[in-house]
Length: 494
Image (cartoon, rainbow, N blue to C red):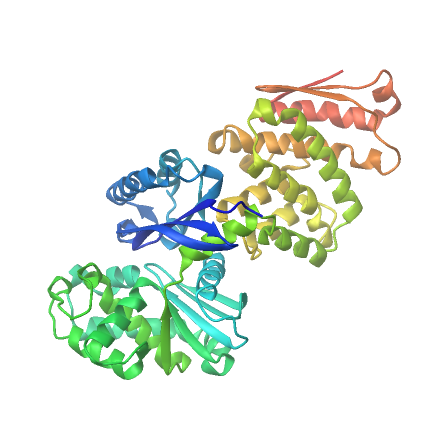
């Protein structure tokens, strides 16, 4: 268990707003102590898959302000997640790299289903721990997440490409308000909802809960104007819709109870909400202050207390594809030995060991498809499977390790020298060497041998005559000298 008083931090890099939350652990629960939010509209700067320089500058300036408050949180107790705008941006590293320098920790860009899982976790901790099923909806700036769950367990997850910022850009040119623009946004949102109606309609849940600033703003406007006593219903939405359509431009919107910061996104948000009510059969929605950032904090607390959902994900993956557990154990033990010998010189930390650990466990999952090129099959599975708990980068790095653990270096592996000049290619070297010994260890115990690491080299020192007695292993290690050389690492064998 983490000590009482431990501070945890979460930063949610949303398509509309950036949110920061710091919480203190008290009696096993999280008590928020600091919260900040800034309207950055990163998604508004996304065009044809490219984030504009202005959007990147806005985002980094916001993080520079956040960083002052985050000085009280240790880097390993802070998690930063990016959502739809960063998912869609092909040049996201132009933002995530300087963001890492500012915050002192990596930025995890997460897939839509992982965002949905974390949203549900955040909402579930704000609701009564009862057994009834609930539909949770989070309308974000670039995507909308749908989750059906009970208590703290999500049962169905979905993410659709519609959000109040992206719909605003797409359907309301120059932020002009027209009835025909609104109808187009409504119809598109209803079409998106139609694709998930079979699994998320009202017959599958007992209550509906809204999470997000957009839905909370809608509720505030309805209650303030007397259009609802609490929560959101369809009649109230219709009245708010009619009121908003009386304005000619979004900057002119004046509705009691509606924050001025929501003027530019409220109308597309109402279009999406109205479409969801109509298509999914929602009669009443209550809202929750729990959201992605709270879910990130609870997930982080679980990771730090060795209750990591990623571990469950990898174990389930290995069971699904019937991997050989004894072989995986041997490879992991040998990888641990190489990691222990190199981590100080190569500056490998906990995150690097976790990747090695998971890659060792599932390096043979492609065998279920075919032995030939099983590393390629395994990499394909890892890239395309839903892996709860993993960020996009973690999933891609895991796939690259499995892809490169055997065979000749492929172009995407060699590109690691440009994309990642340090740790990932070193982890790949460790995994390749660990798998070179697995066939020996199935027959006999490996002798003690020493491993010495320098910045760009690795030396293996074996007992006298051992390599002569094991010519196949000696041959494979000699081939590794050439392979690792292409990755910028010198392998010496004595």
